[in-house]
Image 1 (cartoon, rainbow, N blue to C red):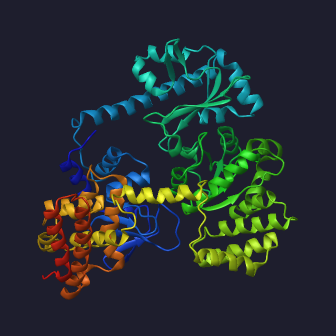
Image 2 (cartoon, rainbow, N blue to C red):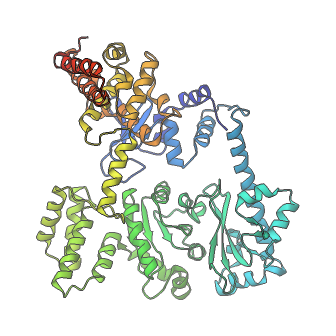
Image 3 (cartoon, helix red, strand yellow):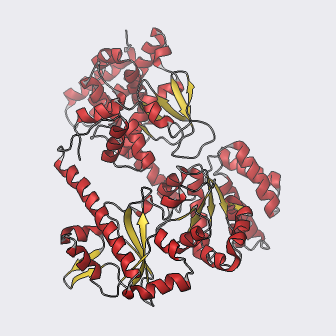
Length: 599
């Protein structure tokens, strides 16, 4: 449902941003603002700022920011409409029900898809317990040693050998073909209609609110693929959900176990480790990490011990670390996965493994070591350099030194030399992001980020900083708007986010609200981030409210002179053969040398 601006502002104004964020982040008042550890990335020093006056938040570490609506969207992984609904409920505001036909249809579709998924889960479970589900029940009971209460707890099921049994069942319940096609449970083609899953044991996938959002299915027999998951749908996003988290979030343990598959999670829960979760047949993402961070500060990686499992741990660790999680790796010795381990060694053996879990970074370096022949001087040198690269991921000097100490002891490397090489690389801007990107791709990404922000000249960073400074000052001192816009027009700003902000401030002189602007539909994600940074920057670097008139006049003069100069240069370059226009622009540029703002 699409809400009008009046409704959005009513909801936003009814939810104080400090109160809402304070339920999830421990905030400490410093001056006019509040600060805390950012919930969206890992940090040791509080750089997450919340302004009660502007009703915005901003992290000076990772750059995320916005209004109270943006916070709820990112923290809860909600859509805009879902965030509005949650905040309206919090403020006991009744939302209109008949606005925004397209959004109303989308909301209704999601609700109907959840109904279909629930019906499918009930059906699959009933088949498992009937005569047609004998093969599935034997698989769970005999091969996987699951108890009946475990089967019921996870809602496990079986999709019959008939390729259209679910389709016929759902049709009998009144669901039309269009809805069934969007559910991902049924496939429609020229050859006819068939179920997505058949002759498979079924694993309902639930979100943290215990709603069935999708399914995983393991084939019975030698069919391919062995495991099959629901496709992406309006209610199912594999990169934003974790199997078993709906149960694991209630665990009293201070850590979560990150597994590789459904059966690992189920086997661990049955053995008493109710804090186990798994990604859904997809690569582990930063969304997964942020989701885990909501419920714990500690994660133990317990993926399979084969090559694929080792690679999964190697890739998951930096993502988890960047999200602010402490990470360890569990060593299962000769056993392939937690399910196999539990069957052989039992819960007590697995508990010992948890107590002996190794620091994840030491695990990563040990895997690297095993990929080099350290008896070869060239390969040993390569190993040390690779280790130094990875040590650069630790930005905090004390943390980095502690890891240098540990690595040098564990792998018998010269501690002083390792520290010297790491510090030298850090001084030269070295860092290790664990991204499989070559240097040229990283450079192009950096250029693209600037381009997305709306700056045509990537080297014109000084002018961009002046634009951002000027906007931040206008947001702090609306009384300066008439003076500033008497010297410079909004269209003269080069950065898209600054240009949009200048236009909005100019349009709403006297009643401009930063938080309201951040939810403007014309803003893209990059513009919204830039705007949040501009609004928050005075809270860290010094507010214009604390400056005297001479300092303000000097700052405004420098900013307007720089912005106008670049704008005039661009206009001159576009003059072509129009010499009269060129001469007029040249005169305007020369006049900037004597330009001064007077308040």
